[in-house]
Amino acid sequence: MFVLFFAAVIGLGWFFSYYYQNPGILFIAVIFSMVMSFVSYWYSDTIVLKMAKAVPVSREDEPRLYRMLENLSITAGLPMPRLYLVYEDAPNAFATGRNPEHGVIAVTTGLLERLDKSEIEGVLAHELSHIGNRDMLVSTVAVILVGFISLLSDMFLRSMIFRSFGGRDREGGQAGAVLTLIGIGLSILAPISAALIQLAISRKREFLADASGALLTRYPEGLARALEKISRDPAKLKVAKNTTAHLWFNDPFKKEGGQALHKLFMTHPPVEDRIRALRGLEE
Image 1 (cartoon, rainbow, N blue to C red):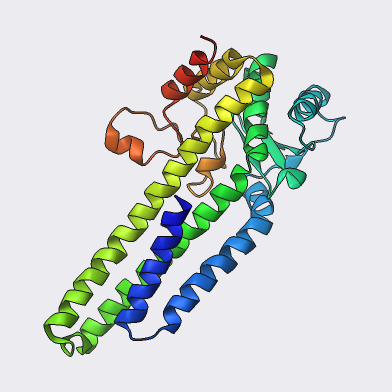
Image 2 (cartoon, rainbow, N blue to C red; image 1 turned 30 degrees about the vertical axis):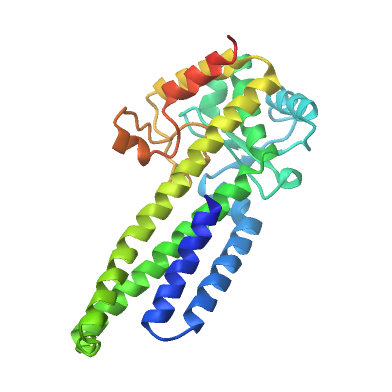
């Protein structure tokens, strides 16, 4: 999937450089995508925590939660992540951080109030698995590449409008018109395709984290029950944003549905599929 991402970036850059007869466009496209991925990798945790209004939690603040995460970290052979709390009624959680040594897990106050010990452990194990599987790096790079492809496409469409108003699109004759149509088609389809790839990556990593978390606690039912409770809870997560929806344990916008087109645009797999997979581990 990442090969497809980079192929889309390079392909768009090559087409635009050919269209404008400027090889520098391809070079800039590749370099800019790499720089943006690097910057987002280093600072993504700080940005996400501020967006979620998360505050750090010490052992003295939440001794039970801290001990649970500490024990799971030892079992997983991972460094103890920094623990944060989000003051929201909706039960949910997320993990961030550029690598296991800089891992962060944040949970909402609603999660602590509504879930029992085995269910909270299941959620923590799921988020810890995201850190162990280095999903933060995967999701961060995916978001940046999608944004960059969308930026390239938007720039090209705006340049087409400028050229059409300036009358310069007539100079290329029939070949120029064909190239213009191809460029417009790529500019429209590329961001959609890139977004679908990003969502597919997110859903795959959620299934992997569910399985890894269940193996870590050795009790898949706890994680399955946590999913049921969280998905049915009516409280809305006020700090949720479209840009960070894929990071949360469960889709914060509670999009449910079984239609194929709807599933394509979901940041998480359908809850019923996740629960079915978890309970299948016990058989």
